[in-house]
Length: 179
Length: 345
Image (cartoon, rainbow over all chains, first blue to last red; front, side, top):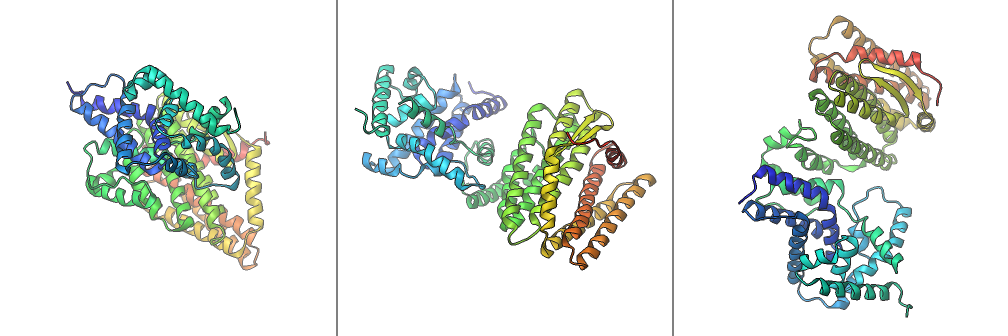
């Protein structure tokens, strides 16, 4: 049974306030393209609303939105064709600044400050998929392994293993001399 | 390793949508829940303008125009701030024009606050939204003005003066409108009025009914005025001319509003005439100084005239839009302020 339009708007308005930014951030970290991330975030909400309007049940908006967004990201990867892991790592260079919100009063000081912090984020950008997805969902989106398992459609154990391997790879990038 | 994760998290948290992007997304999600293939999804400024124009065509110029009278909480408000105003700012050519546009947006936020207060609809959330939007627009106006200063001397001081005078006048009107309403509206109106007037570094306490009870200057005000004094000392001929032009335009605008004003009683008309006479005297004194190449002194007089023009425009607009007396009480308030001003904190 469908939800009345007014209730629907209220529900999605609240969901946008609560989760809009984190969904955008997740998408930006996966897409490495700010504009495309905005488009996919918009599309994620539009599709979810259409699903609800047609009578689909959404018990908990947050995981539903993440699943919808994930599917959009997978479609996007497929559209871009097969990309080698090495190429993905190269593309990670110097794109972090493009993900930050437009700042018309940029100063040299702020640019330098951002660059130092950006080094850590670049390490994440160099992580190949599906490890990057796992680390972003766990440590940036703050989802539990169980919630991640629900979103990606795999077992909690498989997710935990992926997170562990992702952390190892991340450590190797951040601390290349670490034994 | 934990440091690395913390760094990643900290840096990642900076990745967020700007307010403008959020507004655009929100308006598209709720206006386009049946997505149109004709609307571009691009977010670059040029594309925002183009897609905004397409959106205006889709929703109708009537709707876009009706949105101009909306305030936070109204259905069409997202159209006003994220479509109409986006187009306005994108079409402004050059930093000087953009400074003026953002100063206008800042004034609009205060007009919206007045509108909400008059309906008894100014709650904490809307107050916070308006305060944030006002501050953002005022900051953008000043930043663009500073960029424009090299090509258009005097623009930066002009924008600062406009924002200060406008926030002062509109803040007073807001406090007065809200003062006669329910407790929450009154408290929110007074709080917002105090916050926006604090850009002049002036600390003013209002009571709910008649306006001010105490005025004090703060170090911030003295600093602000010292900065303006310093700017005036370095005032060039061109900069003084810019201020004169702004002053004469502001007074012209106020005179047109005076002509269109619904019946004003004799006492109010006389006081407004007095203010115009004072402004004209300032302009004349300014011209004398200007002719003597004393540009800093000329600028001081032009500034006085400019402030009077802005104040009278705001008062006459409020007189037209809202029930209640504003002009005389607020002009009286200013006189009282001068008498009860206490030493700086």
